[in-house]
Length: 175
Image 1 (cartoon, rainbow, N blue to C red):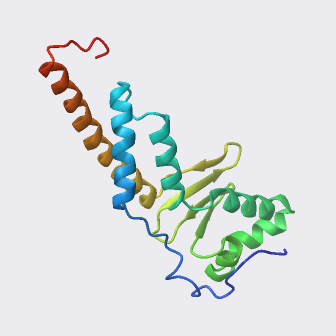
Image 2 (cartoon, rainbow, N blue to C red; image 1 turned 90 degrees about the horizontal axis):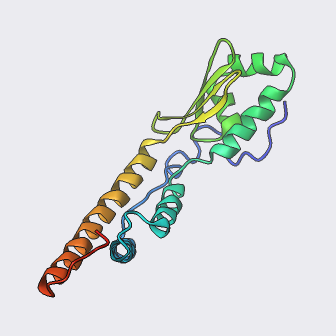
């Protein structure tokens, strides 16, 4: 079986640089606050602009699942001899197939579990069902940080709007 597009041949190469770092920066927090204020003024919680921002930020730490599925599908599409080789492969061969820092575990009946460098299961393949994506811990952490920042900014904006209504003796019919 021919394997192409692999950057690291040695399993230990690139291990330290493979982990994607993410941080909630001040500029990102300001962007979230602006979106939360905009949404609060429209009485919408987590509007489309925030959801798009969240999706783009999570993508920065997400593994390339499409590439992993493609590699595995190519490996499994050949004859059954390829599948037997994959099942019996050692860690080094699997690292060549999936690229660092991924590992795979094969089950009888054609099931495959793919794990990232933290040991989080990120993909599962079941014969007859297909691929199922699972969120990694890094993705969950980014989701959580973004939601928490938005929640605080949104509720502060709503309180500001509500206090402004009370000061003017107005009634917010949108609420």
